Length: 160
Image (tube, rainbow, N blue to C red):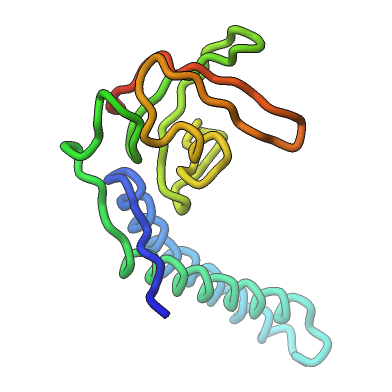
């Protein structure tokens, strides 16, 4: 089975490289220090500090392998691929909630960059899937657990 190809923006690629570097250096060193201190406490069979540090080490290694896999199987979206006329990965979109009249600004990203707290929505999320490929002025319906929501695409551009 072929590996999934992850689409990343330049910003997303940079953040993954930063996280990978931080995990290989800072986080790994902190965990190594925790292990050293826990070993100094003696009997490892009943040492919860040692167990916690080993668990943190395992989680860090898993995340490092996950990031390396994403980076190995990723394609970076170039700025010239981001359309100003139709929604694509990397687009900054202003959506108007037809129910409330409220405007919301999002950046459409691949699944590994999604971060709702910074208004980065995945192209595979319900809203992302509904708007990808659409043009300014179009209205889309998004089916959610709380009902069907309607959004009008007010603006499409490139992130500043």
